[in-house]
Length: 487
Image 1 (cartoon, one colour):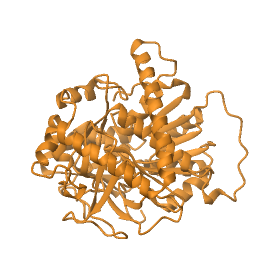
Image 2 (image 1 turned 90 degrees about the vertical axis):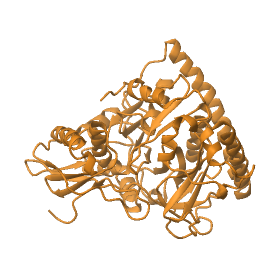
Image 3 (image 1 turned 135 degrees about the vertical axis):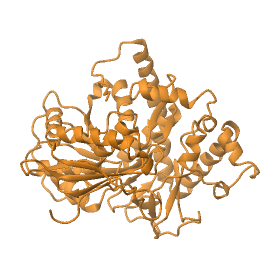
Image 4 (image 1 turned 45 degrees about the vertical axis):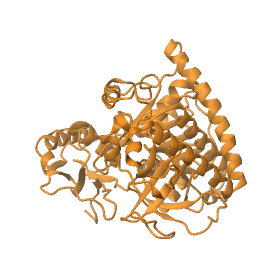
C-alpha cells in the first residue's frame, strides 16, 4: 500500500508554489465565507433559511443546465421546482452515469480512476479537483470530486464550528486542570489517526492542508498499526489535537488511563462513526480535554457537529437533510427515519441533490437547549464493533473495525461483506456467493497477514456459507460484528 509522505519543508517546486497560491486564495474565500456564515447564524433561523433557499435555487438551476443526468431526471418538472418535487437519487445511479453527472463536461470516470491508482493522495486531479472515495457499506463505492468553491465552504464550516464550541464541556468545568509538561521541540500541531492508504475524504483533506501549510507540522498515523506502535507514534509526536474515529479514541483513552500513553492534548476531534454519550464521557475523562464531534461524509465533508446537549446540529445553510420513510414521505420530528436524503449546497461540480445517504436520523422537536438555531438530529450511522481477539499467550488484542474493512476492500476489491467474530480466536467472513471463491481467497490471505502483524498468527479466518445480512430498515449493514458475551 502506497503511503505518501507528508511534506515537512516549505514548498519549492513550481507545482508546490501553485498549490500555495491556490490555498492562499482558497483561504481568503474561506475567511469571507466564515464571516458570512457566522453573521447569518447570528441573525437566526429566518436568515439561515433564506440563505439556504437562495443556494438551493442556484444549485438546481446549475445542475439542470450543466448536468445531462439531472436534465434527464428532471425532464417535465416545472422550471422552479420545490425540493420535494425532485426525485431521490442513489449512489448507484450517480456512479452508473458518472460522466453525465459532472457539470465539468471534460471529466471522465476512466481518467479519475487512473488518478486514483497513480495520483498522490491529497493531490489534484487535472490539477484542479480533489478526489475522495467512499466505502461501500451499501455495496456500492463512490467517487466524489471537490472544486475550490466546495473546499472553501468546508474550510469555513470547520472554522465556524471551532468558533462556536465552548472552551470546555460541562463535564470538565469543575475538574482541576492537569499540570502541563513542557512541549517537546518535535511536537506537532495535530495528528490524524485514520485509514491512510486510499483517497478517502479524511486523509485526502488532511494531506491537502499538510502539503500547503507545512509549518503546521501535521502528522498522520495509519489506523492499521498495532496498538502499541500507534501509541508510540502519538507519544513521539505529542500532538496538541488528535483527530480519529470514535473507536480509535476509545482504545487510546484506555491506553491513556492505564498510563501507557502520555498525551496532554488541548482538543480531540471525532468523526466517521457513531459516537455514544458514554464513549464521549470516557474519552474526555481520560484526556481531560473537550471532544468535538463532527458528522460528515464523502458526499459532503461537513454536514453537522455536536453540542453539549448530545445533539448534532446540521449546517442547514450549506446542507439539507430530509429524514424520510421507506416510501419517501417525511419522517415526523422525534421519530427515527428509514433513511435521510442529503442535498449538498456547496458542490456544483457533482451536484448531490436528494441523495439517499443511508443513515437513519431522528430530528429534534423544537429548539435545542444549547441555544444553537440550527436544526438538531441524532444519528444511527456506522456502528461497527471493536474486535478483541486472543493472542497465543492469552493476551487480548483490540482491532479497529475500519482497519479490518480496509484490509478486505483493498485486497479483494469487494464492498459487500461482513466480518463476524465467532470465537476469541476465530473470524468468519461473509461474502456474496459470487465472491466467495476468488475474492474470499484474496481477503482471507490479506486478513491473515494483517493479523500476523498484530501478533495474532493463530487466529482462524473462515469463509461463511451465508451471505452478508443488511441491517434493518435502510439496507446499510454493520460490516464488523464482535463476539457477544463472555469468552
